[in-house]
Length: 139
Image 1: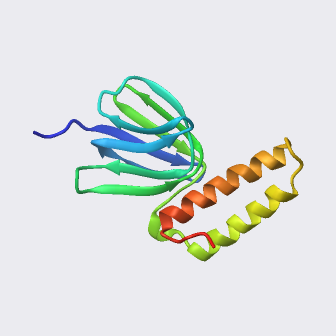
Image 2: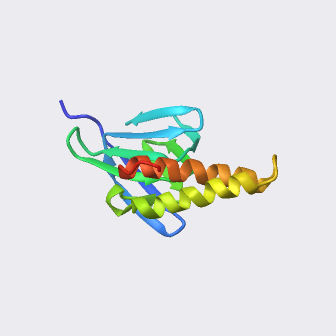
């Protein structure tokens, strides 16, 4: 039996990176992992950096390294608004390791409780997640 589909849009500040019908969306919110199927109840969630998986079918999965953002589900439609979304093959492991190193340095230099500390923590989580998705280990 065919699974019901719903429309998913993935938008970044640079524009649309995905818009198609899928059977399931899988991502990570600030409170844990979530899978969304067709006819899901309305939802608004904050997203953490992770691998976004969009299942067109069991064997056709579109993957993105997703930055922080938001997920809105309503009327059998999901909108993923994220700072950035990259196909895993586009990620450069050595570049990500350098970005992680800079984020860790910024975190150690930041004053405790400051906005600079929070920004460095967000950057560190993003680059760690993107490294995992790229298949490159952090050194």
